[in-house]
Image: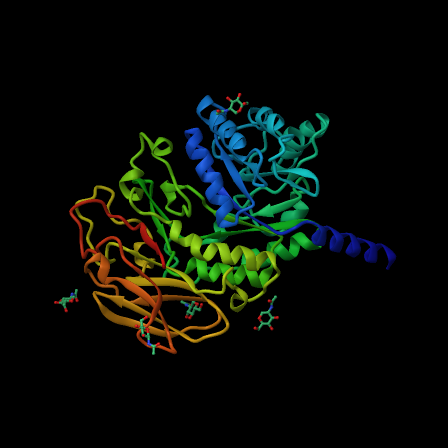
Length: 443
Ligand SMILES: *[C@@H]1O[C@H](CO)[C@@H](O)[C@H](O)[C@H]1NC(C)=O
Ligand SMILES: *[C@@H]1O[C@H](CO)[C@@H](O)[C@H](O)[C@H]1NC(C)=O
Ligand SMILES: *[C@@H]1O[C@H](CO)[C@@H](O)[C@H](O)[C@H]1NC(C)=O
Ligand SMILES: *[C@@H]1O[C@H](CO)[C@@H](O)[C@H](O)[C@H]1NC(C)=O
Ligand SMILES: *[C@@H]1O[C@H](CO)[C@@H](O)[C@H](O)[C@H]1NC(C)=O
């Protein structure tokens, strides 16, 4: 009785004393010092607490970028932590030196006063031990403890067999879990909403074990690099649905996937030419600015941190409406016969739609009107807080004929905020089969 009470008390203390935070996954690539500064300033403005630095190499292009980012963060409250990309490392001994170099930096993110470390994958790696948990214990956690460094380890081990079943009893080495794949439905799932079943299960198990859960939030995926990497994972209303799920589940931490992964399309910040040079990624990402998504991410971060549990509780800093629209520039009926990679797998999970997310104040009354080819394809009464919609009926037509407008009901002709497309929608193409989104913040 007493022991149980004590354990619950500790868990309560632990969950209450560490502030909720929201991070953005950041692909470390070649970067100029100016661009490192810009990324950090923009992330601060958007309301993020830290970048999860996806490190996949300890070559100089990578260590120089890490150095530039830590330098750019100096003197700010913005933090950085490592997320080691275990599809590129075969043993922790390769990255332990860079970890040791930065864990003492003023801008290294700590949780429960310990340097926070995450990963992308690694749940099947054993490093010569009998199983992954022993491998990570012996080659990572114990090696660091031996050097006087007690890390707070929250890896993405959703590649582990049976994940998430028995996760915390199998992986005693972790202090928490992060999932990557739960951020979107799988490729080929059809027109479905993203599920939070796995997130809810891991979160419950984590808290039962006195550990934490970091939940992923993302927009969509489009990767079009080669025949083995050509897919679309739906993003029509994904970010809106995930925001509701996160507020309802109240995970300990949130990581947005991603700040700058142009190759997978889910960037919400800038990406830079020097980082994607030598790849074909610019072909489908250049000119597709996604920073409009920050219009709703910023109020979401504030709401999540304040303990709001419902999308109707999301408000904006100045009480005025904010919003964003997004659409794809190619109809799903396109053949893409001129593109050697052809249509991405999962293309038929996509909908020909104009999508929007709008945050409205609780006072006043608003209508959201959606236009394609200058015709109304949807009209919706606004609710207080976050409103989201996927409005089918997108047709091939000019950029500025694709629009979303928020109208003040007290004056039916007054558009308070709006966004118009920046690229035409095509029925087919003689060029690249591009499923990337045009994203336009409303003003
Ligand atoms: C970061 O700052 C240190 C100390 O001033 C400097 O030695 C290093 O070259 C800087 N890193 C980059 C990438 O400019
Ligand atoms: C997805 O969720 C929305 C509400 O957010 C609902 O209106 C819609 O019917 C759902 N779609 C499917 C395929 O379940
Ligand atoms: C959320 O909104 C509801 C209804 O407007 C309100 O009763 C509740 O107090 C709000 N919760 C938070 C955490 O703001
Ligand atoms: C777009 O609108 C114009 C003008 O009304 C019309 O001529 C055209 O057929 C429409 N395009 C589509 C694809 O419906
Ligand atoms: C309604 O809004 C329009 C556009 O802002 C403005 O010109 C007009 O004066 C407004 N009408 C009223 C009755 O406020």
